Length: 400
View 1 (spheres, rainbow, N blue to C red):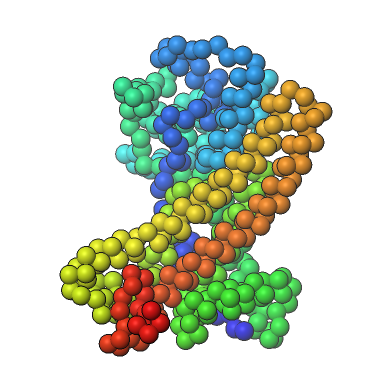
View 2: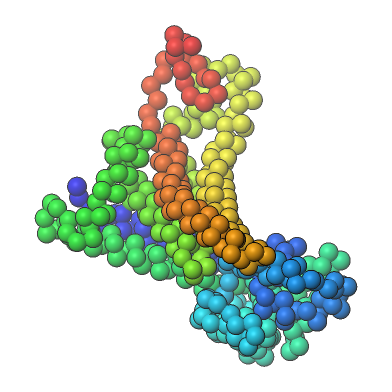
């Protein structure tokens, strides 16, 4: 087996495109969500009381609110890493990330100026406030105005910040680059890889022999191996990183899964041959009126394929994180600690083991389906007058 420079170039290309999309996306949060973490609850209590009547919470309700906020904070992107917080002293332990804003010029500063959303950041005479994971322009007092639906109406600068998810992408991309370049160098020394390359080679052969060749074909698979290897290892490592206590949920971010699906879509459409487009717009063996009716459906089908890719990855990873965090929360919410602790830890360990399998399966399924879609676009169709269209592919009349 020979590893060329082509996979590395495709890896770098995919990474730059992915980074540009994710970096431009502000962290996605729902407008009706509860506060991101307990620090935000304390910082915004005064404003909330002025806008709405605040209902006094019982200790149990307050505990459940904190658990919900902790789970949502784990799932969402943020402008800093927070490992843990000391509520009594109001301290947060972690490290800040750079904030990059485009607002009448380039504004670069550390997210520590926000102090986890509790303070207003002043940069070059402009004031910015971190509210529900998004950065808004405000005044020196941090005023946030709302519309009738309680949505903030403050202006938002263009946010190109290195958020937690972007930072994780940088780390994983650097690891991938090191892995592939090291393996390529080891092949220059001999036919058998050395060191960590011995672990990578079976995985690469698995993707080649079980994914690329069966779905794309032995003649055309090499052209797409770089992308398939990149997307497989990228998703797998990001999934594994999301299971660490760092609170990283990159593949559970819809912006990331959309970007990955767009890559598959672009590669599929630009690699497609004339048979592929002929099957979509003017299916052979089908009456003309049916061709006119089926063409829009087939065009829509080209869009539903990448949509299925992005939703499957996003939903499965997010659901797994929610289940694990909810099981851990049972320890703090349950009244009988002696009984709840073993059950919660046992279930959490069980789900975590399943999540290790899911982390690999989701990377494999995304890669498998991507290769399948690409194979459908590049394969050569051999049909004659006895074939007809059945809505999916061309089938011989004798089989039907």
